[in-house]
Length: 371
Image: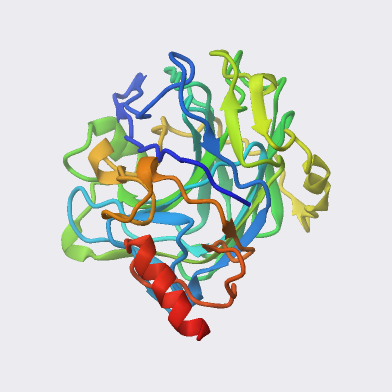
């Protein structure tokens, strides 16, 4: 797989009132409004084990830490929102995360799929309730005064155990799986008009304080805050994430400003070429429909309090040796472990714990190891 330039979208959470939602989600180029550069495609399946340390296909914000338990996102003070964001996009696909949610009133652990058109699919865990997860979706950055979120009760404690959650996103439905149970299916026909998520998505996950006293009252109420930072720090931990792209190719290009999936071109690949793999997911149970009504207003974006918190500067390498435009040169590939490496390099080499390293130094390091 050869990468071309990727742009890393940042996320801003919504400012909420008790009756309406005002979207503050941010993108550096919205294909609904103008012509944007293509998105780097994953085009394959990867399984990242964070107990082995970081990988350079995900970039960091807010200094997450790594140890034998995986990657930890710690919130200790107002405005902190540590997270990881993929440099790649998927065009329909499956994301499976093994994680332990953060505890603490007002603290939110989030898994977010988001596109440049501001399509979005979320799973979120509130630190005030260890037996609940919320699912949600948004389309094209449009947020209304009603809610699309749902509650899902969990028998097991999501703050004490590492559990597995799945978002399986196809052109006609989204499935949410919680600890082996299918808890929600959103179909294209059921979604609000022109609101079904259907454009290339980045994968991002991390922790933030919805109950931060600096947030709007509606956000604090949804997050079951306010957050008492004197009781922290609060920790979300992720052992692994597996991502399957249901399309193939090296990049996804918008051919018009509609944001519809039929308008997306897979360069050197095919949209939905791997679509059949959706049938491989076999839940062990199916939950009864939730009868508690819609969830309280949930902010889009899911991670962070402003765009500067989440924004990244580009590819995982910086300095004079970074190729112009941030592109990865030909001859590099993605491994099944989620590492971007030179073709021919042994994929068993662990990625360095600092992601920001000039390419020349990385290549020199690999040459030394191979001699």
